[in-house]
Amino acid sequence: MKGLKEIPSDTTLSGAYSVLQNSSKTPSLREIALWSQWSRFDPRLGELLVSWIAKHWREIPPQNLNELIFQQPWPEAVGVLIENVKILLPKKDLLFNHWSACVMSGVSPAPHEQFFIGLRKFAGLQMKDDALYPINPYKKWGYLGREILVNKASSKKMPTLLSKKLRFEKLKKLLKEKRRITVADYREFLDFTISQRQAERDLKNYPGLKSLNKTRARFYVKS
Image (cartoon, rainbow, N blue to C red; front, side):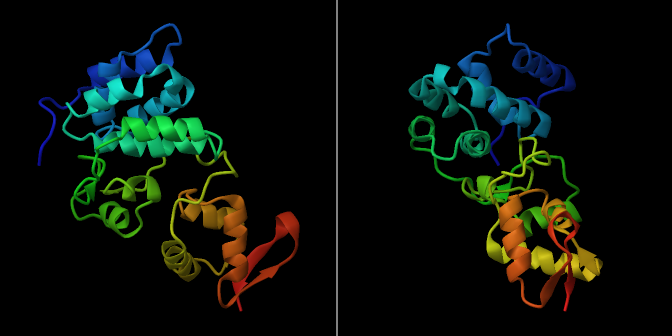
């Protein structure tokens, strides 16, 4: 597997954090390209990059960034970050869509591999779940992953990032563990990869499930 010449250390990661969190500092395009690769080793850096790009993408020449990411071992990793940026932006931001298409021009998806490196126990349960339930920002670019690189728990407007088939597979699993569930239980079990409204629709339409009580006190049980 191709890779970086050097894995980022805690010190270099802290330096990247400092720049991305300091409004008086501006990372170079080369740093953005490099840090996109480091994000495969550190979800926190990925989250900071996503937040920074969401605020500053208009200042980034897309063609220049495209050229720089092709100098990196995993240019498709930038696509994962961009898909997460879309969560933070208006749904129909056509200008950003054109910008991101230019940035990712010519980039092909990865060969179906784990996005994060060294963070999962080999053949462990988390790695298995990454393979079974990958969310759309990763799947689109050939990766297996479930980590949303934004503050997901606080947002009821989170877009639905998991297919209906996989959502219902997980719902079936949840109902084996709990006799009754709420919308909040369901969203948390799906790692908040589903909107509040979609969660309500899923629970309403899932076969053999009925709702009791109304509004905020509503919960669901198997009939």
